[in-house]
Amino acid sequence: MLCARIHDYQKPLVVEDIPRPSNTNGEAVLVKVGAAGLCHSDLHLINGEWKDAIPLALPKTPGHENAGWVEEIGDTVPEGLFSKGDLVAIFGGWGCGICKFCKSGDEQLCVAPRWPGLSQLDGGYSEYILVPSYRFLVKVGKKGGLVPEELAPLTDAGLTPYRAIKKVRHMLGPGTSIAVIGMGGLGSYGIQYAKILAPNSTVIAVDRNDKKLSLAKNFGADRTVNSATTKSIRQEVLQLTEGIGVDVVLDTVGAENTINDSVRMLAKGGALVVVGLFGGQIKVPLLQAVVNEYQVIASLWGNYNELREVIELASQRKIKHAYHSYSLKQINQAIDQLRQGSIIGRAVIVP
Ligand code: NAD
Ligand code: ZN
Ligand code: ZN
Image (tube, rainbow, N blue to C red; front, side, top):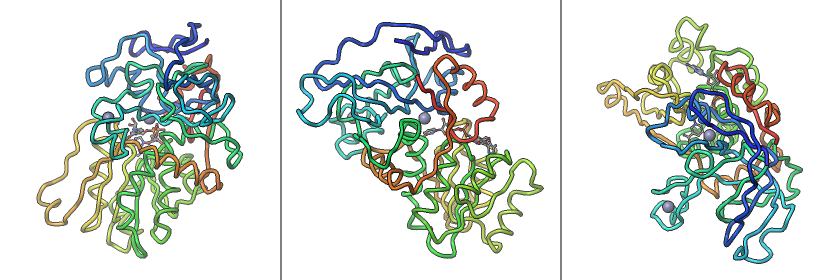
């Protein structure tokens, strides 16, 4: 089967033919990949930024946003649950199943995670992916006419901001506002969840790219701010919020400058929710944080039930998608474009 693998960090992926997994035993399911989303986390991984935190034996196939069709079913998968050809979304938080986090349903927080394409297990930039348990599959079938190119990004880009905003939706009643920083893969879903989960709150999209901001407008943002061209992001946000600031910032970039921007636009009692992993430190001035009772909340991916919820929203056509398809052979072109910031929405690899 054709796949794209990291052989060396900071080098293009190598597109090559390797044997298809032959061990669909026990609970495992072999899935024929229909689409695999290209996440900025893949870029951090390929750049080698995470090589100490997540040591990988190379070569390794990345790809943790996957959807496709059931191809082979292990002998202990309960009968009748899945059939060959079923369209499935692959939940990526492959957990041990027995730790405190897994048992409470948050398998993405497992103490011994095996995330596809981000751990020793191979991901979906490949014609087939071996999923170690049927428990990580969400059967979609013909629901809403969803296609793999829409489903794959939902397993991460369309899941992470959903969980993040659910954590603060109680703060977002009438007369409040939320800013979402970064209108890339995650952010373009983030503003939509802000509208769905907090319909009476004003949603402000922030990016430094006008094309991404106009996508945000199409996807429901009430206001947009270009953080690269504004004279003062704080002044602009204060103007949009009657001098109050925003009650919530969802930072899907997570860089020191966006954290600084976030703190400068928060209202008293506001919450900064960080999901982006561009890197650096989260620095918040202590006096200001305490006096204003700021909250800083981190959020990781989403759990299986949250994935089911976003797939339900998508199947009711309540979520819009912006994706651009690339073949496996074009994967390095997609990676370069992501690196340059020129992808509007999500790049998906269609093997
Ligand atoms: P992306 O490249 O698709 O989008 C990033 C967006 O941020 C782009 O639109 C870019 O123009 C914008 N941007 C970059 N720097 C900016 C700045 N200083 N000010 C304003 N806008 C800026 O990336 P993505 O796939 O959406 O991922 C975003 C981040 O989230 C990555 O760091 C990724 O690793 C991380 N991530 C975290 C989780 C989690 O569970 N917490 C899950 C998935 C991805
Ligand atoms: Zn990701
Ligand atoms: Zn676990």
